[in-house]
Every structure is written in C-alpha cells, then in structure tokens.
Length: 428
Image (cartoon, rainbow, N blue to C red; front, top):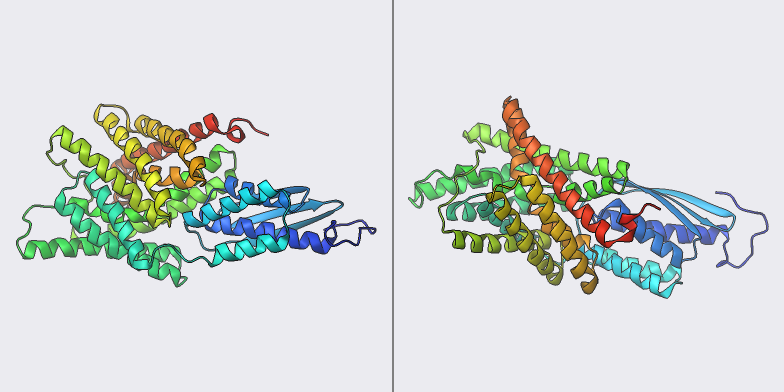
C-alpha cells in the first residue's frame, strides 16, 4: 500500500486507515457471497456495488472457488487484501439478502462502513430457513421425483424417498460439524445406497414386492450431484473467468467421483449394477401429467434444499416444470439429448430474466435450481461405476453423454444471459 505524505486529516476523505475499513467491509461482502455458492462474476458485481457506495474510486477483484484477492484504490492510496473461504455450500436466501443490500447501497449512492457492517452482521447471523430434518425431507422429495423421471415405478419412488432422506440427514449433520466435504459425500452416498437396498429387502421379506427394483438405487444418491457448481462453473467459463470456472468444475468432478466410488463399493458388495430401469407402461397423457408433477416437485425439492424461501422456490419449480417436461418430450421425439437440454436451459434463462427482477431476487437463485434437475447425475455415476469396473467403453459412453448435456445446459443459460443482459453481451 502506498500514499502521498500530505493526505487530508478528515477520516472520511481518503486516509489510509479509512481505506482499510472500507476495503475490509467490501471484502466481507465478497466472502459472504462466495460462501453462499454464487458464481465469481456475481461476487465481483456485489463487491463493486458496495465499493462505489463507500467512495472507493476503483475496485478490482480476482475470485476463485475458495479465494478472493481484491485491490481498492482511493486517491493516491491503494490496499490489496486476500481472504479464503473454506466452506463451499449453497444458501439462496443469503444470496437474496446480499442482492438487496447491493441494490440498497446502489440506490443511496453513499453509505458508511458502519451501516454496511450492521447489515452484514444481520445477514450472517440469520439461521437457515429449514431445520436439518426438514432439509433432508426436501432432498428426499427431489430424489423421489428424479426416480420417476428416471423411469422408476411406485416402489422405486417410495424407497428412494426414504434412502435419500437418510443420506441427506447424515450429510447435513456432518457438514455442520466441519468434517471434510469429500469424506462426508462418501459416507452419505454409502448410507443412501445401503438404505435403498435394506428397504427393498424389508419389502421383499413382508411380500410387498416381488419384482426386481434394484435399478432405481442410483436415484437415491442424486441429492449429492453438485448441480450448482457445475452450472456456475460453466457460466464462469462463458465469462472468460477460467480460474474460477475450472476450479468449480474440478470441485464438482471430485464430489461426483467421491459419491460414485462409494456407490460402486456398495454395488460391488451387494451385487448390484446401475443399469437404467425399463420405462413403466403408462398412457401418454398420464405420463405427461406425471412428468409435469415430478418436474415441479423435483425442482421445488432442490430449491428448498438450497435454502430458498417458498416464493423463490415455487418460481423456480414452475419454470423448471415447463422446461424439463418440454426437454423430455423432445428427447422422446428423437431430438438429441444435448440439443433438447440447450433449448430447455435457454427457456429457463429467458423465463428467469422475466421473473427474477419482479421478485427482486438474483436470477441465479431461480435459474440454477430449475436446471439442476436436468443435470445427468445418473449417467455421471454410471460412468464412474464402469471406470471402476474396467469397462472403459461403457464408461466413455456415459461420460460423453453426461458431459455434452452439462455443456449444453450451460450454453443455453449463457445465451439467455447474452440476450437479456448487456454485461454478458459485450466485453468491457
């Protein structure tokens, strides 16, 4: 940090101690945004808004998955700071609160450090909207909907609901105690897989089912699919932010691998194979109606699991219901899966651009949950399963399918942003 020797004595007119205070509170905004799971471009935008309102003349930031480096300039002084965020998670309610803070300071144009600090204290101290058990129920709901969309029948849907709920309950408890994320992911995947098998065995023992339902167990671990980092990482790449994008995609791949290896271990012990289930015979009208309901409930479950308020979650669910059902219809009609995914994500992005500003929430909190249900988590798990078994041909087939669909989802969302946001349409 450097400064001229004749700086004014007024503490609010650019002295080094005042710049330290202003820079520190701006960095705190970035830390809270990053820990809530948003993309790096949104973290930078949040910090820039507050920096301008605090009188910082120029603010630059470099953001990765877990680190932020900022430099704040005022007059002849500048200050560079670095911080690290170790907890990677999703908190849609916090993102909403930070967005409204940014809007407020931008509207007022001038605020004090004390005012921003007080609001950040309130945001940081706000507890999760849903207790641990309720959060597990939302994950169970999302995975049960996934089970139907993956061609599961009533037995698969019910057993997946129970198994996924137990897995998310364990995951949430362990993460709140500060355990390593990858270890927690493996334990949660193992519990969900074993619980699925145990519940099926219990049903068989009482004669409640006589058919083979093992194919549905992959759906029981889909709550572990890192949809938010996958999508935000791809969007970071679309903004040419390669350090953040590659870090997020690497993190997502490690989470997927941790979960899939655990599922593979359970599969090997109990003798299961994650082959796709045979579709349930249904009338086309009934299938369409059930897909609409399952898509609505699946997105709703994921949105609530991400700590979204009910209004935000219902908006995401409504958008996802329309887009995902249309995507499935296109796939059934013979359209390539990646093309259908890109079109569905484009619809999600355009609808989110209409809905989010009217609700005064960040667009990402509506669009990403609506897209997460389209992420091919089952294909990704199967790819790692077959790699572990040495069947590289099957593994590559599933991995390519999954990779193309994820890329298509990101392209659809990015194109929607380019069509509705000048900051995405033009490089500055």
